[in-house]
Image (cartoon, rainbow, N blue to C red):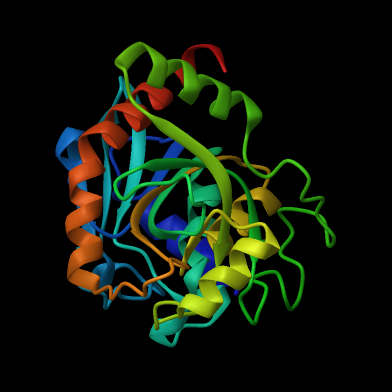
Amino acid sequence: MYAKIRETAAWLKERIPNEPKTAIILGTGLGHLVDRIEKLKCIPYKEIPNFPVSTVEGHAGQLIFGRLGGQDVMAMDGRFHYYEGYTMQQVTFPVRVMYELGVRTLFVSNAAGGTNPYFSIGDIMVITDHINFLPENPLHGPNVPTGPRFPDMSDVYSPELIAEADRVAEEYGIKLQHGVYLSTQGPTFETPAEYRMFARLGADAVGMSTVPEVIVAHHCGMRCFGASVITDLGGTPVPVKVSHEEVQRAAQKAQPSLAIIMEELIKRSAQKL
C-alpha cells in the first residue's frame, strides 16, 4: 500500500501547480465551498492512479488544487465511505497521499444527525473529540512509516484551531456548537433507539465518515479541524423520517457560514497558528 501511496503522490507532483500545506475534505451538501477556491487545477479521481472513485450523490469526485484565504490548498470534492464497499485503507488513501504531497493541516466537514437535545437542524458543530463505532480501524495491518504503531489520541482535534474558529464565529456573528462526533458504518440512518444509545455513550452527533480520515491524518502528525452540519435530529419522542435529499438541503443552508469559518481558519492558521 505504501508503494502505491508514493506512486500516486509522485504522479500528482508532476501535474499540480502549487505545493499545498493545507487540505480540505468536503462532505455531503458542502461541496459549494469549492466556489470560493481560486482553482488552478482540477483532476477527476478516475484519472488518478490507484485512487478510488466516489459513488455518492452530491460528491463530485475530483481533486482541486488552488488558493483559498490567500493560501495554497488542495480539496477533495467528494470523499469515500466504508459503506461503499471500500476498505479502510482505500477510504483513507487520499489522506496518505496528501501527507506525501506536503500537507500538514487537514480540514474536514460532514453532515450529521444530532443527538444533543440542545442542537437544532442547521447548527454547525465544531468537533472536539470522536467515538469510533466502525467495525475496522484504518491503522490495522502493517504500520505505515509516517507515525507510531500506537498513536496517542488525546488531542486529535487541534485546540488552537478550535479556539480560532470560536473567535471567527464571534466576529462574524455565527452560532457554533461544540461536541463529540460518532462514526458508524452506514449506509442506514440510525433508529430512534440507536440515537438514544449513542447519546448515552457521549455522542452529540452521528455520521458515516470523518473518523477514519482524521485517525490517519493524526497518525501522520497533521493538525486536524472538523465540523459537522446538523442535518437531522434523532432520539426524539416522535420518530422523524430522514432522507439523503433532506440531509443535502439542510447542509446547503448552512454552507455560507461554514465556508466563512473554513476560509478564515485557513487564512489565519498559516499566519499565526
